[in-house]
Length: 434
Image (cartoon, rainbow, N blue to C red):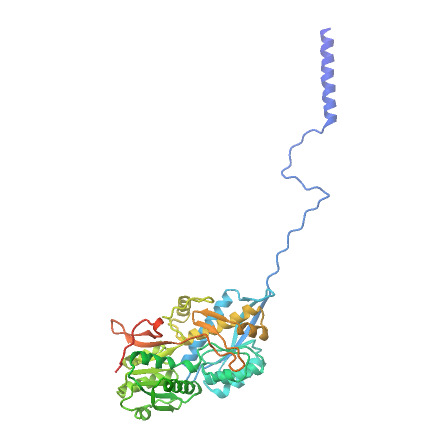
């Protein structure tokens, strides 16, 4: 009986297990990763965004690799090339359509010769397909190139070119980086007045080129208006090295000598004034004094004042581009020397072009023109703003000069100091100088 009961119970257990197997599948080992359902195929990988289109814009110019303007022109080129290298290294300028623009330059040696300039700028536009133009150094050469820019519809930034008259010819595409010539030496007259109310007699001696003559004419008009007496106003030919004949005409009781021209003649003129023992209280000359190598003439440099478009000592707070310290550091690293205002002006020309293109979002000349007409910015070089009237279109009206004087430090070494305007000076003026 007991055996029969046990058999019945065993049979019931077997039947129960069989029914359970029919109700649910037997568990299996879990797979390493669950496969997607057959009805939902795997989504394709996301496509990478296409790389931004790139374009190279050509900037054309001539440079005085040879000739009397070589020193200033070389420094100007250095500054512009530094700007171009930095923009390219940063990836270029982004246009409105996303295109990234980098820059290449095309230039020729104008040999400091005005006769070559128009021929070479025509070649830059018609054969080399330059998109934008930078002027050569000097007002005379820049004036010759400006007509080509306007004729062929190319934006040109003029740097190293201060004459006012270029911007009074009805041009609409030419923009000036420098303070105009009409304001170059007027500050020297103001500085003299602040130093000595009794100083009245000024001798003006200048190079017979467009820039220097424009500066001298503006100085004479301003000085007469301020009550000065112009006791001599005489020009000398470009390339002059013997200044004795003209120095002999300077009256013995002269209070100030002002004028000059470019680096080579300005440095030699200053040396000749010293060697001839000219007794004057004040000397202010164009272009040459701000150059660091002006001090190579030794004591003949002492006390000389010079107007400068920019100085390393100047402490502008830019709202566009690098600070002065950043520019100086980069320039020294690239060229192994302290930058002069010619180098700073070359870099500033690049900044002006960059601002115009960025604001326009285009390389189109009319779009960039409209953008430049509205520029009002502070750079390490100073303020930049253009006259947009029909009478003076492109004339620089934002930038101001600073005036340096060569003095001696505590150790007797010649150094530059900013002496005018008063709010920017780093030292009191040495006066009288002799």
